Image 1: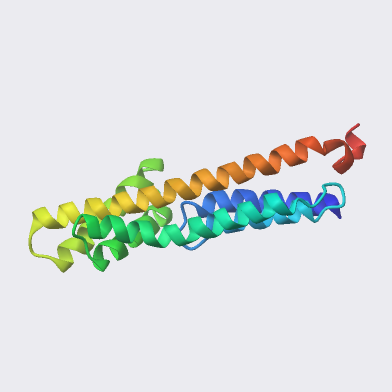
Image 2: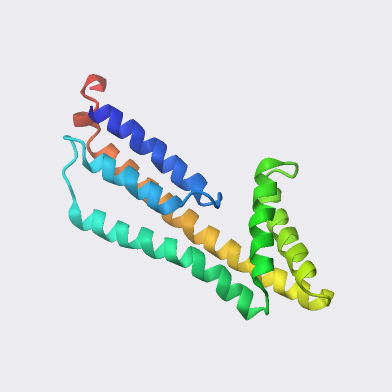
Length: 171
């Protein structure tokens, strides 16, 4: 059972990192569930302090993921249409990965620009607002990615520390 929990926890860790980029998956909370599963194994002692701190971090980052793009959009004079365009642009980059990793950066900006152009007549203010919306999106994505990656590091360090107990057949 421990090996199944370790494997499922690792899958959740990878899903959490992917969720940092995919708007439909809450990355850090999914990674946190992977940490929780690891601590439910018999081999690894339950560390409530670590789980509590990481849960608070995951929830704060989840809330910030909604607040930061709004702040960026408002700071640069953007609208809700710019934020919706950013999300649509991200989905386009995932469905049509024509530009590879650069598509994740370019398409959300293009989506924000199109959203702002639909909402506004002035091209200069639409470009400025699109940049603000895009900058907020990138900031939120970066924070989620860093937190999910740190959670993966914690996960791997715990597995490494207790590898003899978790995987006795490798000794």
